[in-house]
Image (cartoon, rainbow, N blue to C red; front, top):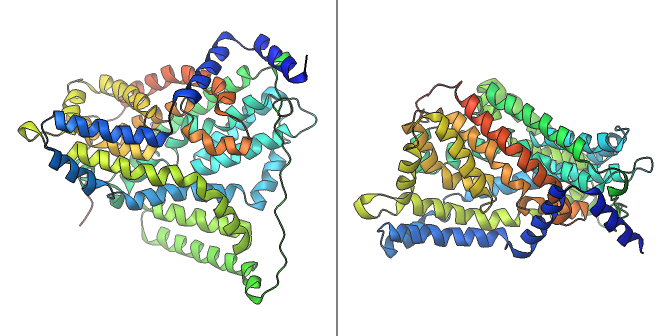
Length: 482
């Protein structure tokens, strides 16, 4: 029997029934689930059909589609930049050296898996794009160690837990960033919610406690579910080459290339950025500055330039990062069109599809039932619309109106969405793609472990949104100054 066959047989003997079921589910998903863009196209068709059934004319539906398609062009660019800046920072030489040092901290295989999970989730609170690449590079660095025999699949799943657990409770939370940035909100949502800065969403003690609980839970699951003995499959067993290619060095043959390799220009740009940031904190409330999506992206972009040291190194990293933004660029306009059809295409009685859904959620009654149903609905919809920001733009018009109707705190409603939104990422492989490229694995290799996380996270999430929701009081929306 070959080494590969021996490993496969051992793998089957060592895995639990739940893990084997999850592997089958992952295989089925890879075979039958189309690309996420197809789901977005189907979503537009379904929403358009719903508007027609509701009595809207084809002309009104078409006008809503075309009129809303580019409503969120600025936000589409911003979300693409979250991915790009995270990738650029994570692949910079200083961060690469830091990752190599961090990889030698854990002393046992199980501890190593839990450790990767902890760091990936912690980094995701700063930037979810950074977490994907950082976590993947850390998993590879741990797997390269000669003194530890660690299951590479478990390491890969652990490195994804930032996206599968708490990213939406951090600074790059799409929904929280949208609600804190008036220009990113559609007029319909802005009228309902007003502006909600981070003090009303991710910086509430309830949100931070939720993040802590989910991190502890995820790390514990990673630790106790890491395969041992014959069930371990290393990167070598899976045919993964862990040797990273050194960056290519180029000779400078033209005067203009000296500027491309200049270390002065990045330093000047970073100093200017820090100077701007200081003036912002001196002239505006701290929460306003921290909640600024444009400021956040400027800081991370210039930090990436500074850490790469030269314009040439920075641009090479940007070139590698751009493909990871493709899904956002082509999908978000469709989400904007969906939102426009739902909120603008009026049918019989002048009622829109969004208003019908609003009535359904409002009829749920008290805030406890509302919180649980919204969380479950968000998780279910996320299986088919794998985008935190895009999906929020579809949900927000009716969810936030319903929250107002049942007197649920609007900031906590955003966090209910954020807490539940990460759950489908543990099953749907869409956001795993950049990480899988780093790990050189397939989705089915790690979904068995992330599906276990999903099963254990779901009841905890439902309990948290219900119990913590009762600690809030309703606050009327505050409209931005003209």
